[in-house]
Image 1 (cartoon, rainbow, N blue to C red):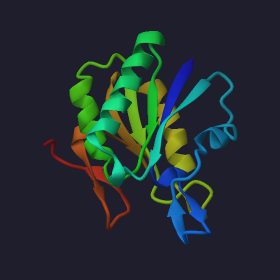
Image 2 (image 1 turned 180 degrees about the vertical axis):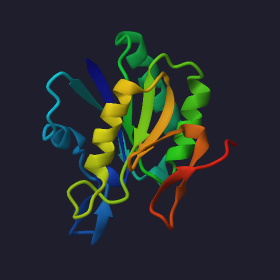
Image 3 (image 1 turned 45 degrees about the vertical axis):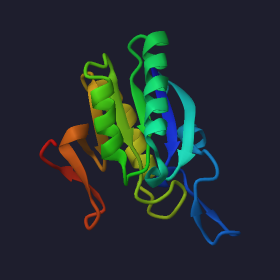
Image 4 (image 1 turned 60 degrees about the vertical axis):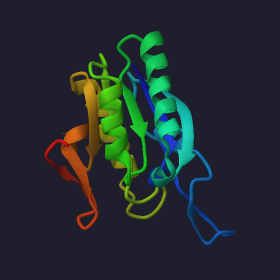
Length: 171
């Protein structure tokens, strides 16, 4: 089974920049981490869309993401889609995609991390792995998969104090 992973940046892909003295979106690393997983019956295709902090995402970025999804759905019948995304605006993008694809035909899953992949205590690989499993099990729709939980994109919010996503009433 083929799964498409679209990368948009966010904390999950941040690296420490000695020059800037902070973490930045400078390199795409999802593919490298996927190679560490044992996925014997899974063909995973990684497609970079952007590489930025989600607070910098624009309406144009979300429209480009929707165009990529439409292209994938058109060429890869039945391929679930996992999107790595920054957590600050993940729910906004999820709601945008729900409006753009009210009946997507496949699961579309957004995930990310509170700490970058490769950093001690990172939750990125856990969330990515859980998203790949959820892509096999969920009915078509737009979801957020994070810390062992699955939420409809319009029924969750980021809880900054708890450092995770929690259930919420739809907008």
